[in-house]
Image (cartoon, rainbow, N blue to C red):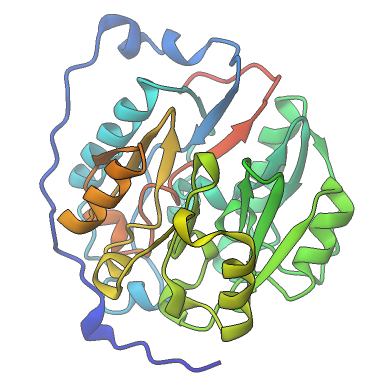
Length: 315
């Protein structure tokens, strides 16, 4: 794969301001997270131990030790508060020595009460596997078998397209080429394999975002030509929201949609207008500190569609 990292093209300090709202007594008590979700929930992990302690993707280059924890915590709380207005939030306990555990999108992929736990490509993240497995088991999920020799990084590379009943699966940097076939066996759903060819977009969720109503927001240049053709064959032109490199590098596609609201780190006025015209409400939640580690809104969340398990309040 062609690897033009262009470190100078990785914006880190843009749009760093963050507003943190006051929490109600009920929110502060943690009771808000103890409800049984009706239509699913979102898993998050507090950034108590977040930092850039090593380099496993291009965004981390020159960022070791540069993240500001208080600012990261404020930005994370702002995202959590916005999401909690529209969805139940579950929490997995943060663990010392695992700074990337905050990126719960990589915990695995859960559909209904079945979950695949990630097999991390980077050795620095492999200790997270046991902790995420324990969390899924405690919530009543059935843990699916997964080959030890097939890397797979969960909902960072596997995105559910609810409108079409399919799963899009990226591979090439973190997840193995066999991951899409394995997902089809586990979930018995059609899985569309997409090869990622730009190391800056090392997970599918950094450059591709299925939205409700069949809309799809993505950055075409992150994919090889056959994958671009596969996307165009499935998503009709009127449902495609193609972003340019500037928006892609601001991780606009690393977004979370809940109830028609699209939560994202940043976006241009043009992209904001296109999302609005498509019927969505863009909500900017600046996440500059997490961008230093190569993650934004989607990376910080794992959506649990149709979950029937009780969510766990934050400790």
